[in-house]
Amino acid sequence: MTATTARSPTSRAVRALRFVLPFVVSGALLAWVLRDIDFRQMLSLMTAQVAWDFIPALLAFAVVSLIIEAYCMVAVVSYSRPFHDLMVAARIKAASYPLSIVNYALGAGATTVLLRRRTGMTLAEAAGAVFVIGLFDLGSLLAFVLIGVGMLGASTPGLQIGVVAGVGAAVVAGFAVLRAPIRMGAFDRIRELDVFRDARLLPIGLLARLGALRFVFVGVFIALGRAIFEAFSVHVPTLDLIINVSLLLLVAALPIAVAGLGTGQLVFVGLFEEFAPAETLIAISLTLSFGLIVTRAVLGLAVAREFTVEALAATSAEPGTDTGADDVGGKQA
Image 1 (spheres, rainbow, N blue to C red):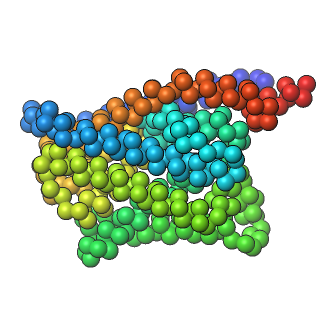
Image 2: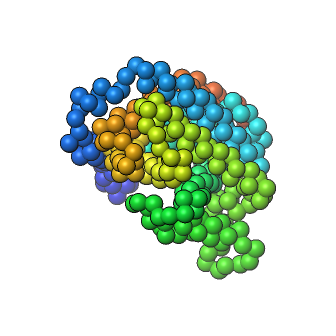
């Protein structure tokens, strides 16, 4: 008891640091990127006409991407649980958006908790469902990068293709190890963890369908990238757009900055510097980032309270639902 109490302040400090650090990183990187920017010129580019041209594409992306997220969640979870409601799946994902704004990892954690509450999965099973979808996101991004580079037929500035190919090979190898029909000694304990259950047991056909859906999801985001460049009257060749937006998404997913702010702008300028001045690129990047933040925050706040109340009520009403060790102990008592 004493040891636990002594560790509590440290644990709280670590949690606070994890929450605050992305804001610090975003602020520092934004200050670095904006240090030589002509703010008057940058702000003059962010006009009402740009918003008028971009907002329809942003709203379409929000709707289509949420539908794809819902289909993916239902496809994975319904293999082991009676979960087929696309609307509930969409609300689960939307409710996690506010934490996703802080970083991708917090959003994934929120999705895991909400999925557990709604379906009665264990926390590890819910984390496994989120994990396998995330793996296909990574694979889809790498596939777009490799396809784009292959079609260009030349090296891309700033792109370490060997690293991209290596990560892609590691993802494939990881699936092969998880699904290998042979005993692997000490590795079997890891393979049999609940968090890897979906990656290990889902049928190949279902995984192929999931991969196709995530591939479309990345394609929809690349289309949004095209829309924001067109709104600012900047032309980027299609293959360069595919490669660079995919790389941008990889960086944005790193849990070190708020919604990719700072890291996104730094990488955005580096990737697209040959197509427009820095002021224009910063204006495009900030418009895209804040557009996504506002849209997802509104969606998340619209469903957060309603979904939480409904999920808790559903959990309490279903005797067979796994609500944790304390609940089980209470029922046994």
